[in-house]
Length: 89
Image (cartoon, rainbow, N blue to C red; front, side, top):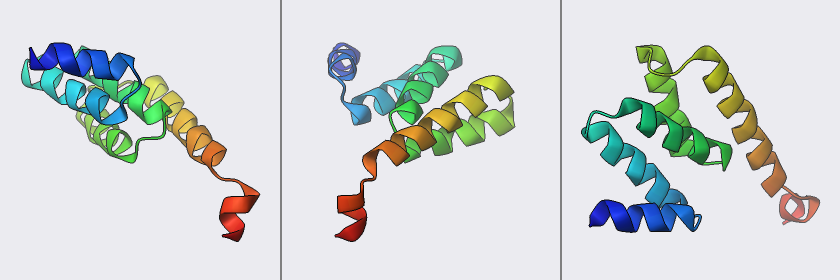
């Protein structure tokens, strides 16, 4: 039941729910699904997911291309949230 609600929240765009869903998938031994959730989160600009992906990359669970793409997308998402008005404030 918890997983169902996490999935619904993740579909709705909740970053924390998607991160936690990745953790649940990892606990159940489905590392491939967990990594997919964390990649999506990293692409949305989540720093925690990026850190997890770094450790999983070092452990060999994430491919070089996937990690590089997630890293680039994470940076693009972070850059998109920056604006001249925010920098000035």
